[in-house]
Image 1 (cartoon, rainbow, N blue to C red):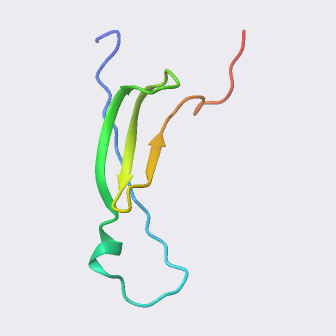
Image 2 (tube, rainbow, N blue to C red; image 1 turned 135 degrees about the vertical axis):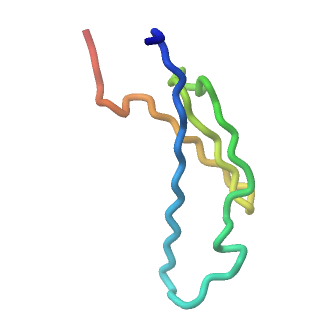
Length: 71
């Protein structure tokens, strides 16, 4: 067993509409680009930068996902 086995990032997108009705093709495909980061700016391992079609950017960072730890 490797000391640090390779990790795989899985991404799910949940769409929500507050107005109801039919979805447009643009609404059903809001993601323009996903850039995987081996190390995030916060020094967390494995994250992603998600750019939407309107150029908004969201950073997925798992820093402290398992809770705050201190010694």
